[in-house]
Image (cartoon, rainbow, N blue to C red; front, side):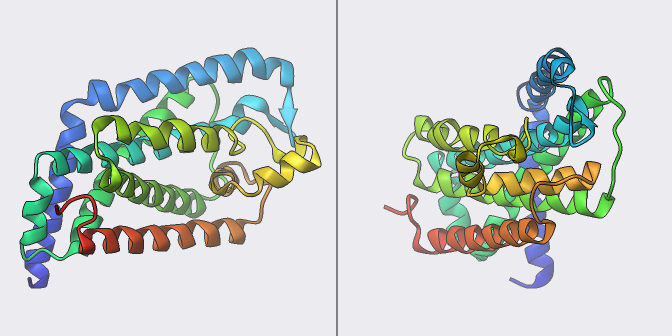
Length: 257
């Protein structure tokens, strides 16, 4: 395939993915906005008024970046894992694999679809947050870079989960038992400086912690970890998962029988 044909193929996958979640926005976009609004009410207003400030920042302002990024993570992952598994279940993936389309284009197309839903939900959550607090952005480039890289990472993770899934039940195992605990323990609602030494050391092994803190730096100029280290970890995971996804498609793992 030449570059023009590859561009057409990529746009076809991306358009299909965007239309897929846009058509059912009541199920894909709206619930995230409602859920995050509840986080702001419960954690931001009710609990936050008792906590006061963290690092000189009001509690509700402190948790806003983490809540936004949590929505991006969950939706980027959910979009790809459900979409790719559905395509695999309905035998659409086999059609793409036997076409002249290179495997990396398939990965990029699904990844872009997950990123699109992550961005869409992120915008909705930002709109919801504006009802509860005055948002400020310390560094626009850092904030945008973190959202892009994080949504890429979890879109790829969703694709890998879908490759290995053998049933619709399997696509909920990782989000339930891995993604959700890591997200809640990733510094969304607290600073790791508030933790005892042992749990602080455990938290530093959680990659989501670095994503949340990098985004918090972009929004508030406050972070518990090194910004360069955070970007290094995120980029390393993105590259690693992309290569893994590419290899899985090349070998036809979970697809070819």
